[in-house]
Amino acid sequence: MRTTEAPLNPLTARYADVSCSVMMTGVQALARLPLDQARRDAAAGRNISGFISGYEGSPLGGYDLELGRQQHLLDAHNVHFEPGLNEEAGAMAVQGTQLIHELNASVDGVVGYWYGKAPGLDRASDALRHANLMGTHPSGGAVAFVGDDPGAKSSTLPCASELALADLMMPTFYPCDPADILELGRHAVALSRASGLWAAMKIVTSVADGSATVDLVAGDSFTPVLPPHSGKHEPTSRLLQPTLGPLERDWLSTRMRIAREYLALNDVNKVVQQAPTDRIGIVTA
Image (tube, rainbow, N blue to C red):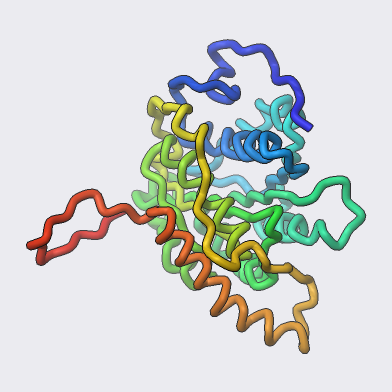
């Protein structure tokens, strides 16, 4: 059920369900993303909640603090925030949300969000690999927010997680500003539900710390195009034979294929300029 939000004021406008332009940082966009997803699900008549867990670390070091400041909005939209004891514990908690269908739960699904810095991704890779093998529920979905520090602003080494996420077989979105976080975040949840895979979002320091004006009208009419035969994966905690073999084959074939089809159908990888005589292509994030 959708509940009444707190009265609108200039400091909370960036989180309210309004169609306007607001100023927000990348971290604030990440805090709004679960609220927007809850609003869309409620508007569609779906009884779905949210769950956020992970471990702090710059450039997402202030994410948990921002979520704490917006606790009243999280409560109003049935989004539960529980910081993890460490990265692995947070990942396994989010993994468990995709097994809601095995419980006598009061909701039909849970959208899970994990957050952590690139070294936290390294540390939690075994937990995340098994979570992705198990998969996501069609009425839930799981998204990993990974904070990368390519300039080593607050890290001993430059951080870049693309190869690690590719090895974990998580389709990865790379937003360039707060508006991109909201747009690609919508796709990340939809792709996860359609394919049964975890999705990931690479958030670099300049995007997390930077701010920009975001047009909230853009997300009002979000209607993803779903591939045929999508949304049929049934996650399971039985990661031993005879369940394991078919589960792994489905992970490597069917689920990855659906993810690629989703990206193509929704024009996520946009071609911004082309001509019939082009001979050289440039690919950039």
